[in-house]
Picture 1 (cartoon, rainbow, N blue to C red):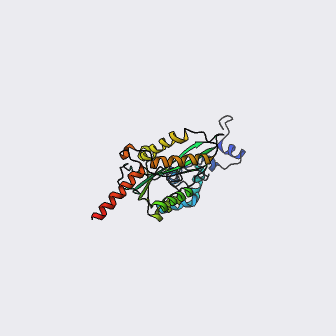
Picture 2: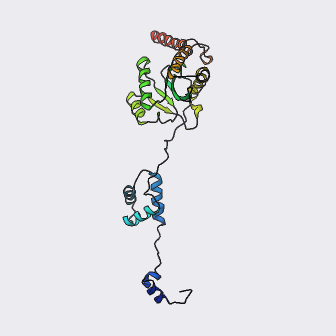
Picture 3: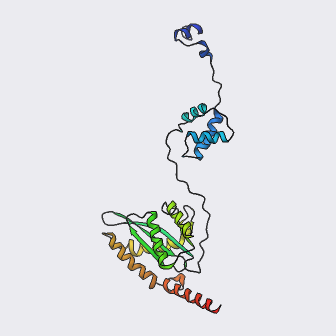
Length: 268
């Protein structure tokens, strides 16, 4: 039409389209649908079209499902998306000095490697009051179920704590540990992400364990790690004085608390 001066009717006839199509202008405004769909899709990462459409209908939107699905595909929401794992909001918990054993425990993971660059991990558990090392579990892999078995073993030996302070690692935030804690009546106290100082007791303990064992020896197998670790646990609990405990050992501090509690109960 511009180059050869052909009329509209003649040009439409040559390329076999009706004149109404030539003059047609799309007046649809899908901005509201796009905004509503994007908001729902980003809020509910795992929902598909049917669920999102049901949400729109429940919200009073009467758009035709064909129109919504057209925009759903246009936005490429029908492709599988891997959402980032999100944690619930964590409330800052003060790191208070405990006055009773089994009031609060702390636990954390550490990692190191043996000769040949074979990796291994440790699960460290301690009592916040007496600073007693309750367990150091050593293995190449430590799942949430292994964490539960370790805690069950400690509880069988010395009773259960009121709460356990941890970071937000996947083993600690797993559904298995959540159900276990509910069944046992134990509060899992999560620190805020990126705030390791809120778990200061176990962080300081980790530094001592790394300096004394992990950084001090070359390991050729897991048995060597376990033997040296067990020897260090006995040393730390029964022989090494702690300044925070008035230069008493964790075992002496715990026994002193038990004696005082017994004397108080006897007096009452």
